[in-house]
Length: 62
Image (cartoon, helix red, strand yellow):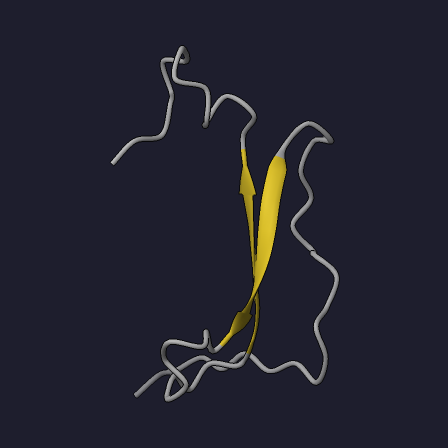
């Protein structure tokens, strides 16, 4: 059996480096809608600047 655990006593600064023009967000775990989640800590994600541009070939859409 294998597992992973993330733990943080306080919110940390993002550790995921990205170019200055990239956006991003940090979320705390567990999120409010699922307090029973066992993971604790922070999630850091980054967004390429063209990701939200509808004129881009790599525009994000669902």
